[in-house]
Image 1 (cartoon, rainbow, N blue to C red):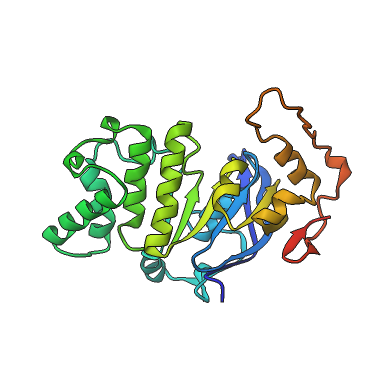
Image 2 (image 1 turned 30 degrees about the horizontal axis):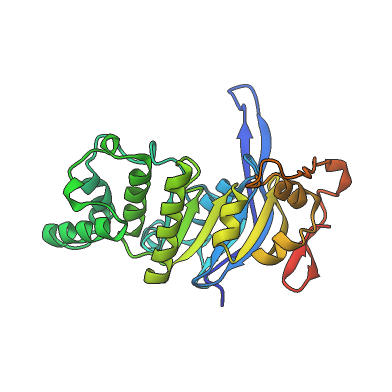
Length: 292
């Protein structure tokens, strides 16, 4: 049985509402379904505004979905009471995109990593102190820097602090919301390698949200491609990159930079009139679904 099952998930936002205005209904996530197996890294890709971040936050109920179903280990996450959801947070965590804004600038690194342990009442002061030191070492940070504030760390180090905080409660499932997109390329590789090592070491399951397809190809077993709130293609990574079936996926892949600047480019410009946006996913080859 999959660890996470998402079925017909929908999220609407109301934009520009006022006292005398009803506002405009915006569909950020439009009837998407997918599942993630235990130990898998599942990629959710698409350009900015495609709905991938909103989808990830709906899974953890950081954003309340409008409709649909999210099941974690067979339990209905959207039906959890506040107390049960608080318990579930120990198993499901998120690493945010921006390490500059996701850490409280007034808290020391030690306090940031310790905070989830305090909230959930885990351990006494000595046990929490030992756990924080263990987590710092686990993500490759120097325990001598525990008393520093976030601004005293580099971007890559801050993201490691965010990761240590997410791992504090021993979760089994992590939503990684573009975890390296704001980092330098050299630092990106270090953080991605750390994520892969931790997955093996701690038996973690990842939902990896990204727009960088090179990264997704490197670390994800399966990929779903989102376009304007819908999943338009979903397949094992190798199959998707070798034979993309949807025009949007082909356009995305054609935009990946190539190492040789003199190599001929075949950039595909997306023409939305080429496809039916309301087409449903169907199997085009074994395990490969596309809305064509």
